[in-house]
Length: 113
Length: 110
Picture 1 (cartoon, chains in turn green, yellow):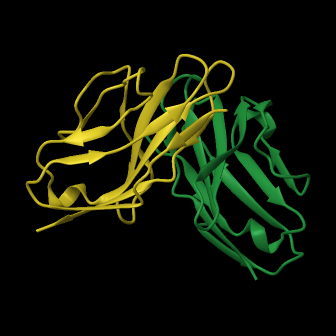
Picture 2 (picture 1 turned 60 degrees about the horizontal axis):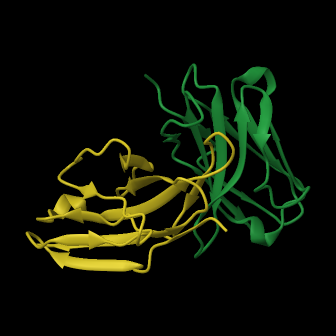
Protein backbone atom coordinates (compact mmCIF):
# COMPACT_ATOMS: atom_id res chain seq x y z
CA UNK A 1 0.00 0.00 0.00
CA UNK A 2 1.46 3.34 -1.00
CA UNK A 3 1.56 5.88 1.78
CA UNK A 4 0.60 9.51 1.72
CA UNK A 5 2.65 11.31 -0.91
CA UNK A 6 3.49 14.98 -0.89
CA UNK A 7 5.04 17.08 -3.62
CA UNK A 8 7.37 18.91 -3.75
CA UNK A 9 9.54 17.87 -0.84
CA UNK A 10 11.08 21.32 -0.69
CA UNK A 11 10.11 24.64 -2.23
CA UNK A 12 12.01 27.91 -2.09
CA UNK A 13 10.22 31.01 -3.38
CA UNK A 14 10.35 34.75 -2.93
CA UNK A 15 7.90 36.75 -0.93
CA UNK A 16 4.91 37.67 -3.05
CA UNK A 17 5.10 34.64 -5.30
CA UNK A 18 2.61 31.79 -5.47
CA UNK A 19 3.25 28.19 -4.46
CA UNK A 20 1.06 25.12 -4.76
CA UNK A 21 1.60 22.05 -2.63
CA UNK A 22 0.11 18.71 -3.52
CA UNK A 23 -0.96 15.75 -1.43
CA UNK A 24 -1.99 12.30 -2.60
CA UNK A 25 -3.68 10.41 0.23
CA UNK A 26 -3.72 6.68 0.72
CA UNK A 27 -6.12 5.18 -1.82
CA UNK A 28 -9.62 4.90 -0.42
CA UNK A 29 -9.07 7.35 2.42
CA UNK A 30 -11.94 9.81 2.40
CA UNK A 31 -10.44 11.98 5.12
CA UNK A 32 -7.56 14.28 4.24
CA UNK A 33 -5.91 16.79 6.55
CA UNK A 34 -3.40 19.59 6.19
CA UNK A 35 -1.14 20.67 9.04
CA UNK A 36 1.91 22.90 9.29
CA UNK A 37 4.80 23.48 11.63
CA UNK A 38 6.38 26.88 11.56
CA UNK A 39 9.78 27.51 13.12
CA UNK A 40 9.85 26.77 16.82
CA UNK A 41 6.15 26.10 17.08
CA UNK A 42 4.00 23.02 17.36
CA UNK A 43 2.33 21.22 14.47
CA UNK A 44 -0.95 23.01 13.84
CA UNK A 45 -4.09 21.89 12.06
CA UNK A 46 -5.11 23.78 8.95
CA UNK A 47 -8.12 21.96 7.51
CA UNK A 48 -9.94 18.68 7.04
CA UNK A 49 -11.60 17.32 3.90
CA UNK A 50 -14.13 14.53 3.78
CA UNK A 51 -14.05 13.47 0.19
CA UNK A 52 -14.25 16.74 -1.74
CA UNK A 53 -15.99 18.73 1.01
CA UNK A 54 -14.30 20.91 3.59
CA UNK A 55 -15.36 19.47 6.95
CA UNK A 56 -13.35 21.89 9.07
CA UNK A 57 -11.23 24.80 7.88
CA UNK A 58 -10.93 26.52 11.23
CA UNK A 59 -7.13 26.40 11.17
CA UNK A 60 -6.60 28.21 7.89
CA UNK A 61 -4.61 31.32 8.83
CA UNK A 62 -6.01 33.78 6.28
CA UNK A 63 -7.43 34.11 2.79
CA UNK A 64 -4.01 33.80 1.17
CA UNK A 65 -4.37 30.06 1.66
CA UNK A 66 -6.67 28.05 -0.62
CA UNK A 67 -7.15 24.31 -0.36
CA UNK A 68 -8.96 22.17 -2.87
CA UNK A 69 -9.72 18.52 -3.30
CA UNK A 70 -11.36 18.12 -6.66
CA UNK A 71 -13.02 14.74 -7.13
CA UNK A 72 -12.19 13.72 -3.60
CA UNK A 73 -8.77 12.30 -4.49
CA UNK A 74 -5.63 14.40 -4.27
CA UNK A 75 -5.56 17.81 -2.65
CA UNK A 76 -3.70 21.03 -3.33
CA UNK A 77 -2.84 23.85 -0.98
CA UNK A 78 -2.06 27.15 -2.66
CA UNK A 79 -0.43 30.09 -0.95
CA UNK A 80 -0.88 33.37 -2.83
CA UNK A 81 0.89 35.66 -2.25
CA UNK A 82 3.43 34.00 0.02
CA UNK A 83 4.69 35.92 3.04
CA UNK A 84 7.81 35.35 5.14
CA UNK A 85 5.80 33.93 8.05
CA UNK A 86 4.46 31.15 5.82
CA UNK A 87 7.82 29.39 5.96
CA UNK A 88 7.64 26.00 7.61
CA UNK A 89 6.86 22.37 6.98
CA UNK A 90 3.43 21.51 5.60
CA UNK A 91 2.15 18.05 6.36
CA UNK A 92 -0.68 16.14 4.81
CA UNK A 93 -2.38 13.19 6.47
CA UNK A 94 -5.21 10.86 5.58
CA UNK A 95 -7.47 8.39 7.33
CA UNK A 96 -10.19 5.99 6.33
CA UNK A 97 -12.69 7.33 8.85
CA UNK A 98 -12.62 10.57 10.81
CA UNK A 99 -11.99 8.91 14.16
CA UNK A 100 -9.21 6.61 12.99
CA UNK A 101 -5.46 7.20 13.20
CA UNK A 102 -4.04 9.52 10.59
CA UNK A 103 -1.20 8.54 8.27
CA UNK A 104 1.21 11.33 7.49
CA UNK A 105 3.24 12.22 4.45
CA UNK A 106 6.87 13.31 4.55
CA UNK A 107 5.88 16.96 4.44
CA UNK A 108 6.83 19.84 2.17
CA UNK A 109 9.42 22.24 3.49
CA UNK A 110 8.46 25.72 2.31
CA UNK A 111 11.01 28.51 2.48
CA UNK A 112 9.98 32.06 1.70
CA UNK A 113 12.86 34.45 1.01
CA UNK B 1 -9.68 25.58 25.18
CA UNK B 2 -8.18 22.42 23.74
CA UNK B 3 -4.49 22.21 24.42
CA UNK B 4 -1.68 19.69 24.72
CA UNK B 5 1.43 20.47 26.72
CA UNK B 6 4.72 18.62 26.60
CA UNK B 7 6.87 20.40 29.16
CA UNK B 8 10.23 18.96 28.10
CA UNK B 9 11.81 20.02 24.79
CA UNK B 10 14.67 17.59 25.21
CA UNK B 11 15.05 14.48 27.31
CA UNK B 12 18.40 12.76 27.45
CA UNK B 13 18.88 9.34 29.09
CA UNK B 14 21.35 6.49 28.98
CA UNK B 15 20.60 3.18 27.32
CA UNK B 16 18.79 0.87 29.72
CA UNK B 17 17.40 3.69 31.85
CA UNK B 18 13.65 4.21 32.29
CA UNK B 19 12.00 6.89 30.22
CA UNK B 20 8.93 9.00 30.85
CA UNK B 21 7.80 11.63 28.37
CA UNK B 22 5.23 13.90 29.89
CA UNK B 23 2.00 15.01 28.27
CA UNK B 24 -0.83 17.01 29.80
CA UNK B 25 -3.99 18.01 28.05
CA UNK B 26 -6.91 20.36 28.37
CA UNK B 27 -10.17 19.24 26.80
CA UNK B 28 -13.78 19.71 27.79
CA UNK B 29 -15.12 16.43 26.41
CA UNK B 30 -14.00 12.83 26.48
CA UNK B 31 -10.49 12.90 25.04
CA UNK B 32 -8.90 10.62 22.52
CA UNK B 33 -5.13 10.75 22.85
CA UNK B 34 -2.24 9.59 20.73
CA UNK B 35 1.52 9.45 20.72
CA UNK B 36 3.22 10.00 17.37
CA UNK B 37 6.94 9.52 16.74
CA UNK B 38 9.27 10.88 14.09
CA UNK B 39 12.59 9.08 13.70
CA UNK B 40 15.43 10.79 11.89
CA UNK B 41 14.68 11.18 8.16
CA UNK B 42 11.35 9.40 8.51
CA UNK B 43 7.78 10.58 8.47
CA UNK B 44 5.58 11.12 11.46
CA UNK B 45 4.01 7.82 12.46
CA UNK B 46 1.55 6.64 15.04
CA UNK B 47 3.14 5.00 18.07
CA UNK B 48 0.05 4.29 20.13
CA UNK B 49 -3.44 5.51 21.02
CA UNK B 50 -5.00 5.29 24.41
CA UNK B 51 -8.10 3.33 23.45
CA UNK B 52 -5.96 0.49 22.10
CA UNK B 53 -4.32 -0.01 25.49
CA UNK B 54 -1.43 -1.81 23.83
CA UNK B 55 2.31 -1.70 24.16
CA UNK B 56 4.29 -0.76 21.07
CA UNK B 57 8.10 -1.15 20.98
CA UNK B 58 7.97 -1.47 24.75
CA UNK B 59 6.20 1.86 25.22
CA UNK B 60 2.98 2.26 27.17
CA UNK B 61 0.81 5.25 28.01
CA UNK B 62 -2.03 5.45 30.48
CA UNK B 63 -4.73 8.06 30.35
CA UNK B 64 -5.20 9.68 33.75
CA UNK B 65 -8.33 11.79 33.57
CA UNK B 66 -7.91 13.10 37.10
CA UNK B 67 -4.50 14.54 36.33
CA UNK B 68 -5.37 15.14 32.64
CA UNK B 69 -2.18 13.37 31.65
CA UNK B 70 -1.09 10.81 29.08
CA UNK B 71 2.57 10.21 29.85
CA UNK B 72 4.59 7.85 27.65
CA UNK B 73 6.77 5.34 29.46
CA UNK B 74 9.33 2.70 28.70
CA UNK B 75 11.19 0.77 31.40
CA UNK B 76 14.47 0.32 29.49
CA UNK B 77 15.37 2.83 26.78
CA UNK B 78 17.22 1.70 23.64
CA UNK B 79 19.40 3.82 21.33
CA UNK B 80 16.93 3.27 18.50
CA UNK B 81 14.26 5.04 20.57
CA UNK B 82 15.98 8.36 19.91
CA UNK B 83 13.43 10.46 18.02
CA UNK B 84 10.92 13.31 18.31
CA UNK B 85 7.80 12.34 20.20
CA UNK B 86 4.52 14.20 19.87
CA UNK B 87 1.50 13.86 22.07
CA UNK B 88 -1.77 14.65 20.28
CA UNK B 89 -5.41 15.07 21.15
CA UNK B 90 -8.20 14.37 18.72
CA UNK B 91 -10.65 17.22 18.83
CA UNK B 92 -13.23 18.62 16.49
CA UNK B 93 -16.68 17.49 15.56
CA UNK B 94 -16.86 13.73 14.96
CA UNK B 95 -13.18 13.24 15.42
CA UNK B 96 -10.87 14.69 12.83
CA UNK B 97 -8.26 17.26 13.65
CA UNK B 98 -5.32 16.52 15.86
CA UNK B 99 -4.05 19.03 18.39
CA UNK B 100 -0.34 18.50 18.94
CA UNK B 101 1.99 19.27 21.78
CA UNK B 102 5.28 20.98 21.07
CA UNK B 103 7.14 17.70 20.92
CA UNK B 104 9.91 16.18 23.04
CA UNK B 105 13.21 15.13 21.55
CA UNK B 106 14.37 11.92 23.19
CA UNK B 107 18.08 11.21 23.03
CA UNK B 108 19.26 7.82 24.27
CA UNK B 109 23.00 7.70 24.82
CA UNK B 110 25.04 4.49 24.70
